[in-house]
Each structure stands twice: as structure tokens, then as C-alpha cells.
Length: 387
Image (tube, rainbow, N blue to C red; front, side):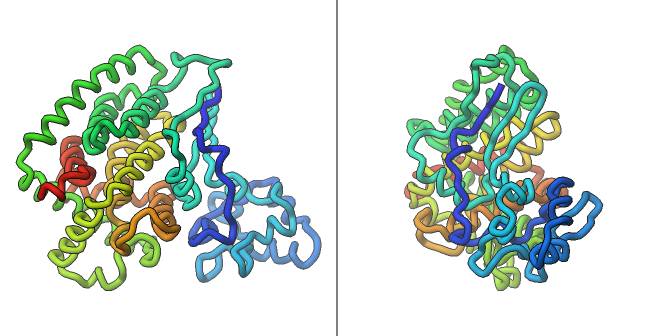
């Protein structure tokens, strides 16, 4: 059975037009066959190939420059390996990214990464709802992992504009965490029973949205949003993954007091609350995140990390960080470029799992409802107007 993101085949690399190329800051491994080809490639470029390879614990890798750029990029940001050797002799990472292919048993999953600015722009421009496409000729829904069924249901709900986004997001997150033990199992009956209860959860969250004390809700949520953003930025800098021009605090912000950084977040929240176009894009982004790797999860631990550590915090950071620098939202490539850099720190590093999440746990011991309350403020398009 094949499961494919419906935008998997829509991607085409824009090469030198990419604002912040994926060929910067990455550890790119070279497979055995590709390395053998490089070792035997003749001429001056063959020598250049071999000079820029290094042996690591994981195998042969491309040696990045002092500026942390791929040495095979030319002045226009285009790949010299592609030009001199052909696409078939690029590393697998370079050929496939941002596509994600994974085979688990009889299922082949083809997703797409959110750490590419062109992918994020495709998601923005797409008018039909994001979804997964399944090849039913060789299988049935009963053979699908629970995570795939859950992600397909979640994407449909999240993109339903008749449901307030903060309510659908809370429902999706709460339901997913409640069903986490079943998400890696091929038990469509049990998963269907869990999803059947989701409308009740949704109605309860609608009531919370309307009846909860707004001032108390805002104060609680705003403090948690600040703690997530601040912890992420501070730890990213300490760990050496700090890209101030990409997506994190500007250097001067690290010298601010806690209250001054709080004020920065408050201003950002007020600006984004008035931008409904950005809110609609967040619907698509949340759906894309859940669909991107739903077919790659094999253990309960992976599911918990996927939902509770990554999805929960990614939505907060994606809603806030790229907006700190600009008043206009989702109108130029710079926004997608910053958002792609955030995706890279989530998808291609252990920053969240090993470092940021433990700190967040110590700061306010978040549970599922703590994040739901944050979403009630962060993704309520009417909240700041009511204030």
C-alpha cells in the first residue's frame, strides 16, 4: 500500500532563488555508491569532490565550509555536483529533500518536510484542503496505522473553517494524546471509536472558549507562550544552533530583562491576532505538520514526542517567532524562509527532545490542557478584538 502527501509531487526545487538554502548548516551524508563515484571521478572537479569529503562516525559526509555552507554551492547558490556530475550522482539527501520516504512493513509512506520555504509557500497557495492519498488497490483502511487515520481526520477538522481554529486545534491535540497508545497499531475499529467521541470533546472546548474568564485565560496562556519561546531561543543559542537572522531572538534581545521580552511577545500576539490571513495559514500548517510524518511512526515513544513535544510547541513557535520581525504576514518569501528554519530545528536536530522540552517541563509542568488553554488564546481570531 502506498500513502502519499497530496503535495509530494508538486514540489520543484527553486535553486538559487531560495532565500536561505537547505545547503547551509546541514550534515549531509554520502552513501557508499555515491562516495565510490566521487572517489573515481576524474579531473579537477574530481579532486575538489574528494577534498571536501570527511569521514565521520556515521560514514562519509560533505565537509562544510567555515561559513557552514556546502562547498559545492556556486556563487548563484546552485549545486556544482548537479552541474558537473548530474542529478543521479548527488547525495540521496540532496536528491530527495524535502521529500520523506519511509517503508514500514507493507506500507510505503511518501511525505514532505516543512523545513523548505518552497514547500511552505506551496501549502499557502494550495486552495484545496491538504490530505493524504492512499492506494486502495493494494490495501484497505483496516491495514493503516492508527497515526495515519488520526492525521487524516485531524487535517480535515483543522481545515474546516466553520469550526474556530482554537477549538479544532485543542480537539485534535487532546484526542491525539488520548489515543497515543493506539496510534502505531493497525486497529481501525478502536481508532474509529476514539474519533467518534471527538465531537463531544469539540463541544466541550467550544463551551470553555465561551465561558472561561478571558483575563485569567490570557494571563495564563501569555506566560506559557513566553516560557516556550524564551526557552527555545535561549537553548538554541547555547547549543550552537543559533541563527539570529533566521528565526530566533535578535542578539540584542538576549540582553533584555524578562519583562522587556514579555512585552515583545505581547506586541507580537496583538499584531498576529488582527491578521486573519495568517490564522488561516496556521490551519494549513498544523495539518501539514501532522500529515508530514504520520506514516513514519513506529513506537509509542515516537508518537508522544511527535505530538506532545514537537507538535504542541511547534504551533506556538510557528505562530510567534517569524512575526517578531515584521508587520506584514504571509506576503513575502522572507516569512516562509524564517518558518523553514524553524522546521529544520524541529526535524533535523534533537534540540526539542533533549534540551528544550525538559526545560519547559521544569518551568510550568505542561499537560495536555495547559497547551489547549494556550491555543484558546493564541489561535482565537476574535480574542484580541474582544479585549
